[in-house]
Image (cartoon, rainbow, N blue to C red; front, side, top):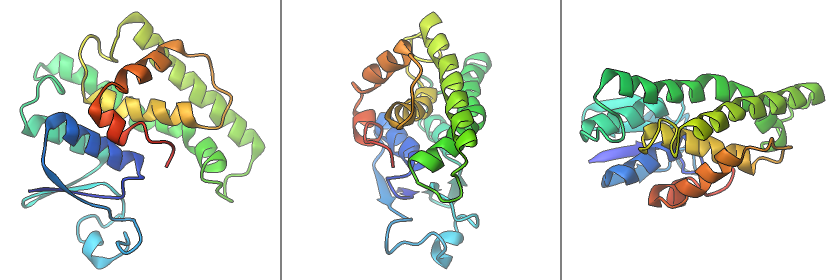
Length: 207
């Protein structure tokens, strides 16, 4: 039995939960990080010494890092529609996943912590404005890719890259910021909302 450890309010946990829906996997979800299941407990730290979610437990296998877990699950189930076997096609999926984890995440982090999490450590107005500007700029790259290809980020077929990017696009769309006009991203979100996994784990606000 596969276990997914991590509170469902985490965007990274939702990546894994959505992927499990796409794969039709029967899993046990343990909401570590919710009250009563602290991430600093010895039981959780035995799985991930960093104290971060998600964690996947598959028999004797323990994995961390949400994008890695999504790729593992798709490969485990031989779902080459979600993660192609062809080296080039797989790389095209993975490059978008890596972009999400690096450039896009770094762009939104300060603004999100300030405007959504209300972090007292993120109150610099200039830094907030710069983060919003960069967030919109990075999202415009996704909009352009969807405009020239689509309907999904790598072309005609839905992949695990769309799980990762769909949640990121939803976060951008729901954030209390001045949004750039990105019609292809909004169409993308409407398309993703037709999928059960997005309805359950993606289109659920800002936590």
